[in-house]
Length: 74
Image 1: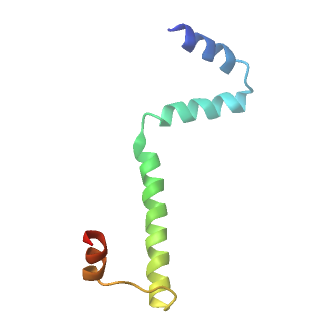
Image 2: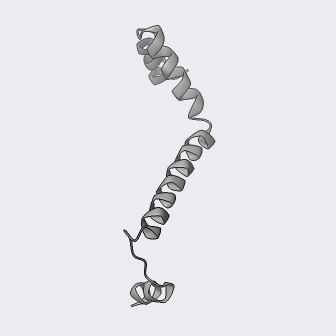
Image 3: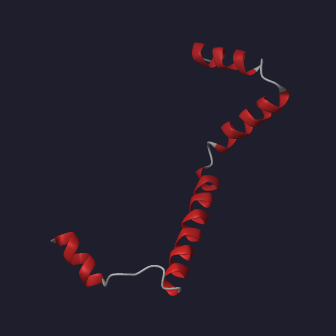
């Protein structure tokens, strides 16, 4: 174990049991990006639904694909 890792461990052992458990959980899930990606996907789905609803309720307007491409390619 590196010196930095030993120092981190020493400090972690001074945490409360709840804080150590949270740290363990965070470290463990840092290896699994799918959990984070699922949350991101959920948030994007909610945002998309919100925009669709706003469009259908007339609270949001949309441009045609041609108009958007024209602005981009300007």
